[in-house]
Length: 89
Image: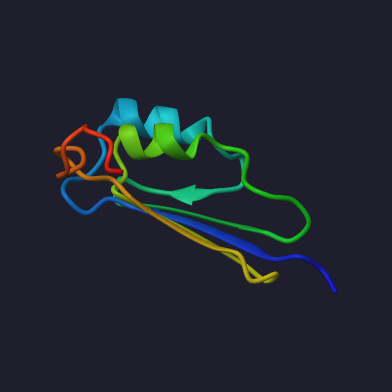
């Protein structure tokens, strides 16, 4: 049985600029992407792009889904975290 992975990014607040698209183009040679979305599927390898950089540079939501039951969702909050920087004990 082979591994299967889907990686998706979505822009919700606003479309990406041309400079942001140039950064996204360097993240994966297999991806289909636009100013609103970035999609790539892998069968025998995995995504090696800069997930946090892609969220900082335009996309708002990241989803990673694999056939071996790994799921990951990341959401960029425009104003950062709503909680104080103090550490809760």
